[in-house]
Length: 64
Image (cartoon, helix red, strand yellow):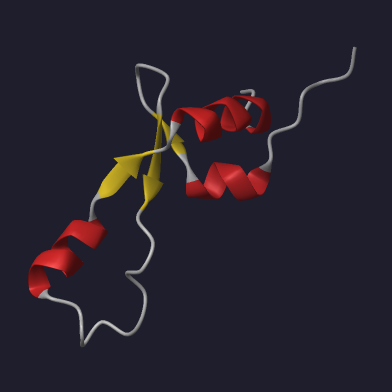
């Protein structure tokens, strides 16, 4: 059986936690920041967990 390859695009965007969940960056924090409140921009800097359905797909994309 051949080696399992990691999807490099997913490896650059997601990080696996110690409990097996995945962290991702929030969307919307790159541009058009002038109309967003400071509280909202602070929240966009924080990471969040992916949904369970996406986590199952990431298990296949990030086998190692």
